[in-house]
Length: 339
Ligand code: KG4
Ligand code: ZN
Image 1: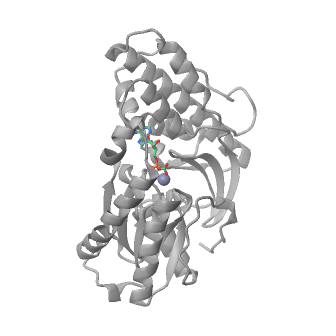
Image 2 (image 1 turned 120 degrees about the horizontal axis):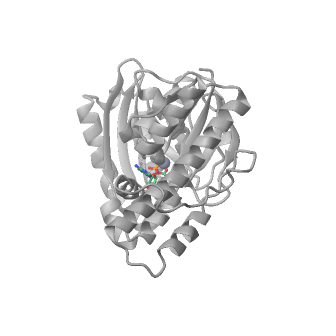
Image 3 (image 1 turned 180 degrees about the vertical axis):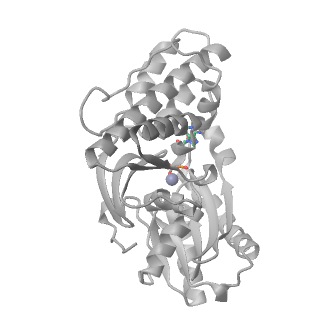
């Protein structure tokens, strides 16, 4: 069984071809960051228009690189939500139309299920059940994953997501959008102890997060001061420490609470090397194992949509002829499938 997958939920246009026995055959991606940078964030209408321009050439190129003709495909998967509705609609309409033209089923995939299953593309995939720490630009969640489609939310953020906290504090330091990776790079040169930012909810029991206070703390720390490179690096270091420590402590707490010893970390922020190092150390000290997607599959991509889509198509699921796009879509409403 071989499928094409399309991702267009935010500012990344992507296409991938995945084969059940031969694995990932191709994955193509165009990032719109240059388009949105001057606005300091994603402009939904510009994102949709650019997806319209980029998606079909990416699909052609993925099929070519995968040496795959339409008649070799058994289905088309696409991100049906959650995300920017206009952006979702571009990928959904294209995927649904291609599937109709090629006479194969289409399946609308949950973007977060894609992130959760991205580590299954690696040579040593995580076993089920496990605890997942999903940290992206829009979400910060701890989830008990019993199997594909069996997700129980253990805790999430009450306000900003971890990626959002990286991006917003980066903006306060004058770093260009998207600030997360840039803030992480700057933190490498920061000094420990120069600043200390709050670790919200750390002293409280439970698995909830709150990151919105970090922006205020950073704004106060830099107010009236010249933003020299050294100052920015020190602030970046302290911001990253506050986020990484909070995520690490809560992820460990989730393992203890569930009695599980496998942690999966995914979503854009899982590309953060300090977070990866800290979690690896903490989980191995605990006697467990931690799994990540490869760096390029931490942020949005179509390969992860292909993994989720293939699992569902192989289990006999598919969508009717309607084009499905959902700005909001609870992860817990997904249908479980046997692994
Ligand atoms: O998963 P993703 O590509 O998109 C969403 O579904 O949200 O995540 C993007 C987020 C952004 O907030 C970005 O700043 C953050 O992931 N991010 C990072 C790093 N790479 C991406 N944050 C910290 N360190 C990184 N290395
Ligand atoms: Zn994402």
